[in-house]
Amino acid sequence: MSKLAATSSLALRVDRDLPVSIHGQLVGQIEYGVSSGHLPPGSRLPSVRELAERLEVSPVTVSNVFRTLRERELIETVPGSGTFVARAGLPEAAADRPLPALHRAVDELLRLADRLGVARDELSGLLTLRLAQDVPLGAPLDVRFVGIFDAATRDYGRDVAERLGATCSVDTIVFDSLNDETLASLREADLLLTFLHRRKELERLVPDGPPIGAVRFIPSTRVRTQLAALSPFVRVGLISALPEFLPTFLEGVHGFAQHVAHVRGTVRDADDVDEVVADSDVVIYATGAESVTARLPPFMETFEYRHVPDPVWIEDEIAPIVRSLLASGASAPGSPSSFAGSDAPVSPEAPAVTPHPSTPSPTRSPTPTVRDPTKE
Image (cartoon, rainbow, N blue to C red):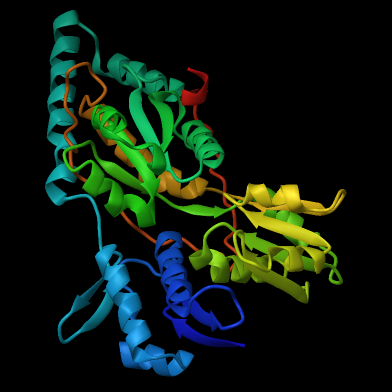
């Protein structure tokens, strides 16, 4: 049995038949809504009493959910106004710093051209040609992506590197591997990237480190195609790696495969995994739940519900940060980043509750440089 409540553009649902606490279900859905953009910064959430009445749950439960989200700095309560999705963005001073330096560099270039007798139209042509080549002017930025699961994080790093091009060298690491040595290494990077809902955690771990950008994720094109191709009569079993994201996982599959009537979900370590598998014709597992494939019957159809970095988000939100860092000379040896301690803009993205269209950028960047720590 489930109850539904609309929060801004996100529909919250509690399902008492799932092997996940109501607290975990609500935290996971709101957290995913924030990180995927259904709940953009500044979105107002219902009051504790209102949400509790809509979902027919205890106000104490909702209050505890809000407290957990406040501790994770994903929401904020304004006395007399209500509870809102936390706002975040590049500090104004940090965002403005590169431009004066760039203006000075342009002025120096003009003076140099005058000394060399290069006409302004000729200089303009040289700059236009250089920009058209899209070749980095110096050493690539040292970018680190901090993820959750090893294999998926390496794939995310390759995807980000492909979008950012030769201007960046992208390395990857997972939160579970962070220690004094690896944290010291992160402090030497030019830019850190991670999931939106883990950005605050990374800021606490590397308080004196480089800027931290948040990356938005969407279900991959392959996953959406596979879901759309399912037979309406097939029985689908979902295996989530994290209990709190099982409701969102279910909503995502329903969104992309509305024609499939029988969809049942559970968590990787739950007692009913074998029962769900036995009741399914197709098993779809979340990233991090790959171990369940060893428990599947031979020849059972199965695939991973994999997310990918949103290419539009990378082009619109992360690439401008990279360009600003390059303009400020962040990648030059011994040159500190002018964005130290700042963070990437946080803006909307769509969760799996409603299918998010994949809109690849029409332009492609030069061949990227990707370092795989497992092969070094």
